[in-house]
Image 1: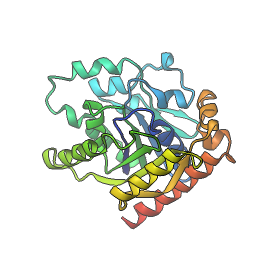
Image 2 (image 1 turned 135 degrees about the vertical axis):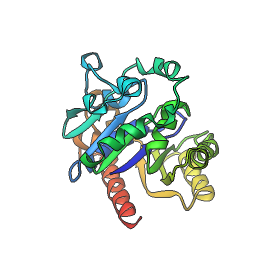
Image 3 (image 1 turned 45 degrees about the vertical axis):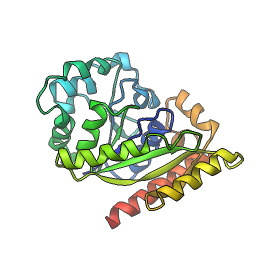
Image 4 (image 1 turned 30 degrees about the vertical axis):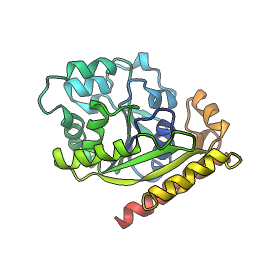
Length: 251
């Protein structure tokens, strides 16, 4: 089982869209589990899941374990949904010993059931993001092709180092993914060049374009790769899935 966290403490950079579409594409050939650890529950919404109907969510998993009870099947992908209840779990877990390893321990118990686990993290570096990184083999960092996009990347990379050194992990950077790229704007081009300059070895070849169809697909409760396969963003996510599969085979 290969576990990938999609992380960036900056909001609005395409984490959820990337998780949803990458998960949907990998599920065409593999057994995939998507885990929503964001209290906003955007990944859950992305698949058209009614949060109010869920008896067990990632909130219950973080407090009581039994991740298998929270898994639901939706459009060919297994998903652990999230709700706003998760926001209160950080306080409830504050005094719990080993709280950084809760998700890691739960995923280990179901390791034989899946080929890939994709974790959508919140826009912060709190306990849920730490849990995700501790449980993961790789971290994928979406970078929005807009001004201030590079802010916080150094801090995130430092957190990855701390997870490895202080929590005895072997977390690797899968790569940085440029998202919401607009070839007609100067700012998008400059951000791409800045990332190439400072993180050339980490930058993935695939670039995800800004595409209004992504918003439409989210409102329809479906990943864009299923909502409209011919959309530019869909084609780019197909390329991303193939690039990641090739990379992981080599690694």
